[in-house]
Image 1 (cartoon, chains in turn orange, red, cyan):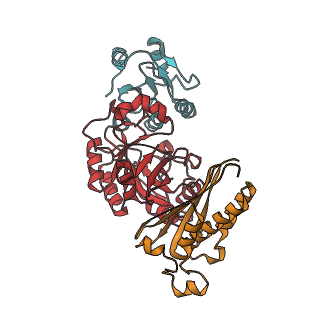
Image 2 (spheres, rainbow over the protein chains, first blue to last red):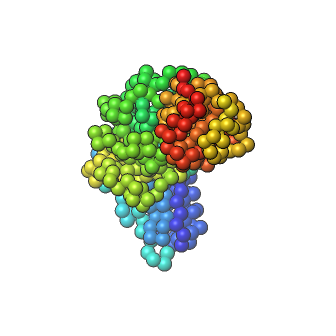
Image 3 (cartoon, rainbow over the protein chains, first blue to last red):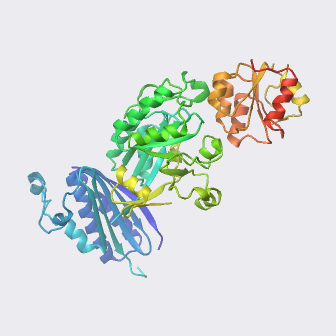
Length: 143
Length: 246
Length: 113
């Protein structure tokens, strides 16, 4: 299997295109012959991370790196940052405004969902500057 | 836990006389974005007038733009100043403008110094001799950069023209550089054999892009929390688990 | 005196022979700092230097210098030579150090004032 890397751009409040990046990523992984179960995990985690940027940030960049050993995704955004990451990790905790909830988003399951589907998850945030989320899903040899 | 960001900390725009006219803020951001570059420093010769516009455009792509300037010292050594706040960069520019070799730019000899807007429309031309030298010494420039909370980096030390070692023969001990830039011309391995005696100062590499296709030809990895100037400072110091990957 | 005379007297090697070697040389200036040359060299002067980078050509064009002599066996960078051909600025080289070369130019009667 070859290595590949690339980038997607996320625009805040752009709900029309919400999910486009993770959908494109899914397509790329399918083209590389990665097992369905793994692709599903990546797609869910990437989708949640993408939605977080779209809901809460001005814009963000999603870098993805695919090697025979792993799939690594990093999203850095220009948002207001997360004041308390532990709190943000609690299922059901959400700071989403009403209009977001009315669209069906902001259930507070985003970060926990990423954690459940990824092998490693790193969240770094600086209030006033933005948030960087990086997660890795390992590939077993033969994938 | 820190993660690795990709940075190109030396990119010119069409405001620099020796850069191509296609290096508008809009296009340099597009190019950097296509390469997945997370952090760009805009470093024009002796001016910061395109930094703010580039930063605004880049923000929409989730790219951090660091305010930079490439200052030409009295010894004709190029020094990069990187700043966390635009106001600090403007303060540095004010001093550079005051101390810049007098005279107007000659577009035929040196190239155009074009100021544009987000739609790439020409707003005007910088009349100053941006290719010229200031009457500020290397020491003084580093001092001034630090007084404005910036990072002082010796540009392309492996380059003979305008590189500190080419011009002075050595790097003076008293100057507190935050990093030395090894240009795209020299590999890390080669640089180690040539400049090993300066390995106590952090090294970075970057594109020194004067054309769009130059952007990202060399980048430096920064292991840090988020793409901010202060995190960059920590990474250069190797502090708090942050570090430079080059 | 004509540039060709100087080239012959001092056995200089011309890197771009297509350039105009028949021009009048009005004086000479020696410096390795471009800003210094921009400030002090005069029209028609020869410039003696070790700097081989492309920016020298822009300065030579700007000041309408009659040519550049690189000392210590320095050779122009590839892009420098290309630009010199474009701009019709003769580049000459010599194995001599600047001190000796300039002494010889002085004894030929060239001055910098």
